[in-house]
Image 1 (cartoon, rainbow, N blue to C red):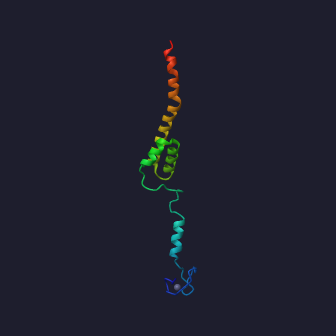
Image 2 (tube, helix red, strand yellow):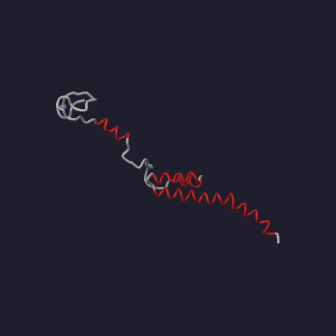
Image 3 (cartoon, helix red, strand yellow):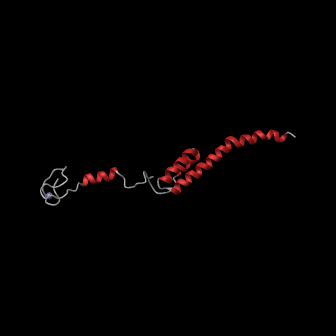
Length: 117
Ligand SMILES: [Zn+2]
């Protein structure tokens, strides 16, 4: 590479130009550094806009636990609107599944007793 200040041909690894004693910019090295360390310091960021996605809505309804996990990921990843929706759908679905599994059989189990008087 060549020195930007004096135009001398210098080694890629030089920090300083040996001819004019000015510091060398390493554009390639700087850009790879930025790519290696994302500027978002939130830890991670969910891709795309904060819009509830049909696929995740279906997942939240079919697999409530996964929906709640998705919601937590979205909220901590910067999508509070979508995240809340997934959690609400997941919780509603979980209550519904719980109702189907435990409450309805109990209700049907009690019907014979209602007829015995
Ligand atoms: Zn130089």
